[in-house]
Length: 272
Image (cartoon, rainbow, N blue to C red; front, side):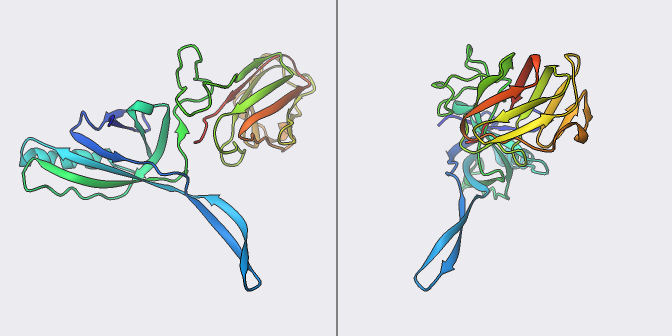
């Protein structure tokens, strides 16, 4: 199979195959759902809640070395790779546009009868988000070169755009399988333009709207990420009407009121 890549938060990339860790199995499971039921009467129950929980991704490797001393060094190297004080990313080199944010459970490296190999080392990678994420954000995607657009992401076959200029009505396309909510997966919205009395963004699909009540000019930079707007790098809770925006999976019909000569950008990852 193709090699598996670890990527640390600082961007450092580690190719397991090149480091002497031959991957035998990397099998991310499907979504791990937890179902809550309420018993009714004597003969049945009703479903009351469905929640997506963390994933445990099994990774099985062979550790290769040249002698017993080198095997010890390989064990130390693997321990460094699996350091999980902070989460790191894992992805298949053949599908690098989707990655999982994980932490590693403990693993035991037991040598074979030979001195240069440890076989079938089982490593469980815990993905607390419960989903894979796109490796690139919407502002990094490039249709012409194909950057960030992988198989199965629903971006090849769909017309999409995430920067809009002087368009009061347009579609924001959430290509992932879960909604992008303001409290869990907020979409970063960047606005520049003239709005002397403020402006309103409405998601007609979710029947939500958020208004920036403070007047702004083309020299101002407005950022909306979740609940609190930021104007010129200064968080201003009083500058909004305290509403928020979510984005359903699929198409979201967006409308802008009160603005002219504006550009609005949406920056987010998608979850699969």
